[in-house]
Length: 343
Ligand code: MRU
Image (cartoon, rainbow, N blue to C red; front, top):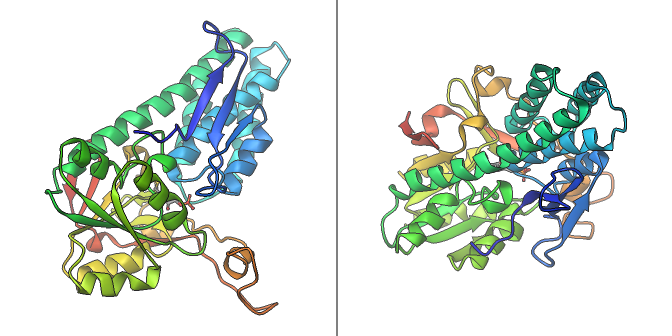
């Protein structure tokens, strides 16, 4: 794929992981410019997650894991207990960034457990183990996405057209993506797959990111505004819907970018299969149903000033949930790295 890595740990020498820093694509600048943020600072990672410079459930999990590793590197204390305290503080701090994607909390819990289970190591050894764990979380995500792509590609035949919402592509993960992975794998298999990308108001991840990355990959993509989806389906242009997820509850209800639920209802009305694709790290068995998933609310300016100018009267009341929940009964199948599971 000719899309750069969303996020990675950069080492400064061939042999040592310390010192190192985090490099990530600033997704708020796409598609106009492809620029990277290079940071040693956990506060910049918090800011990057909050402002969607890095976004997408798996990618923010990786960012948080690397953020924890970078926080321990800033610490000059040489006691292992001090490093464990830094990890605990970093987890508490990054937990305040975004509430919905469980991958964020899943990755941080993994880092925190690793720290607490390795209190016998020296401070330096523990710092290195934490960096290795963050890199492993990234690499495992890439492998899970690849497997999702292979399972999902089996559902697509040559000439199919897929509709997607938001961006659940390479940019949202370590590599390949979840919802877009089957399209990349199908392309490798020589199938011609076309995509309709919903624009995804208010922050336009569909038009800014999905359309951009699919074009980079040479996939045929057509951009539509969110309110065109029903008509496009009615015209018989869509064979399948593929979307990602930020958290899948134990009963298989799935939270994803605001607007996904509406797309699922439209798919049902037009008899189009609706697939949710996510790594197993997105499944949260501790959350019983979709009603228990915390839904992030975003600032009103993202709705009123989304296009670089005011598009609403000053002082208008705004409600801006960033995610919605698609009930399990609208989901044809959930596809993880472990395979395809119909409802
Ligand atoms: O607010 P965002 O851009 O982080 O929302 C992202 C989504 O809703 C994605 O569809 C989801 O995280 C899955 S990414 C593989």
